[in-house]
Length: 531
Image (cartoon, rainbow, N blue to C red; front, side):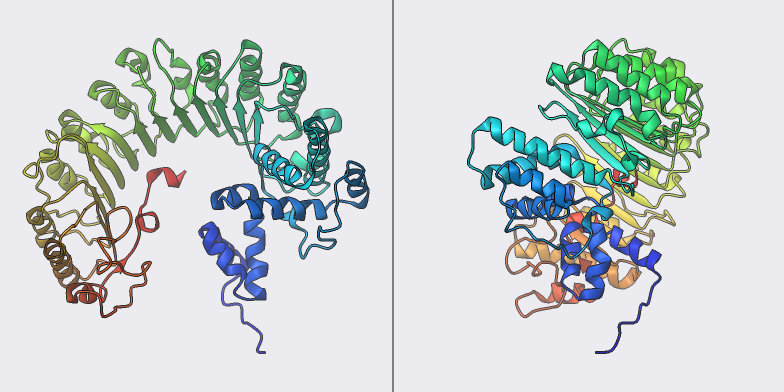
């Protein structure tokens, strides 16, 4: 057999594989030995997350059994003393899978181990817990070995089992290269508080290169809040801070935001979820002069008086993601707090009123990617705004409120660089015709949220798109509805296989000569994915 010639350097292949989803990676495993060797490190870099997406219990079991097979002989003998039969476990795995591990989700690991043990052993719960703890300790010892590979650690402080192997007195080099750490903080066994506090105290010393801290709060007391705030102050290289509040997190939120000033020279990303801003002082943010990415998602009660002290902060924002409706006054105030009107390149607004749309081009004239939700009253002003955004390349428009087919006119769009357009509301045939017949933008990707229940109506839509594809010559990707084209069997394109078949209408056969028809998840570009 002729040896396979490597066309691309390893670095290029790594980049390609990093953009594939889990199912695509699993397909690569079966191609040949060469692609198997390339793909295995990617699948096993974050196996708990990858398998969690598949929801396959058999794969959960296989994962844990493979890791147990990688243990040292002494660790295996210890587990056998608990009654665990390892005779059907692989004695020599094909790869040293442990060296590929980059992301360790301790909670998922614990869940997988518990499921495997419950299906393997028939014993009392107390004995099962002892077995689970023994396995967890052995696996963590292995993951924290002399060759540190972990980059991302996810811990949950709401269970009965704490990874005591992570404590300073048992520390080895396993966390030396850690860059990201995430905590789920809920109601936990109070007897573990001392261990948790010791671990939080030790993090800056044992993992000095952490750049991202992510805290998900479901329950918080003063002691834990103070420990986490202290951690923020001592992470000298912290660039990304993310905070999610479900309930009971008020004690940490105010302190954390005020203490972000201690990271003013490094912080570039702030992401807040479900935060109640009522009477919450934000002055600590004013010193964060390197803040480039700000995400405020499903938060409430942010008032102009809260934000007004930050209007002169001159943040060098590049990405602003506002998935909360604070009203036009607050939104405009946030937009004004940037370094210049050329600063923001990517903007998401979940509620854009007429007042915002009318001045958006002046406040954000350098926009490249705009994702905006409007109502019937502000829709008529969209066209002028698009015309004024000379650098716009990606545009997503969503509408809320009762449908009014006479409120939109997107004809004669002259934006020179706009190549991605997503319209997430129903367009009439007349509106689509007006949009595409006079569109001067070099559209490559078109996404229409459309329900076509009649052949005649569908054919009219596709004829308009076909005419644009022929005359313009730029359109390459098309999606209709969030599930791709799946109007009925006659329009179903067999899981996006764009080869024409005899059951397809003539207009569809002709259209497929010019464009790929793709499902929503393969063609959608979300600002959130850039972070």
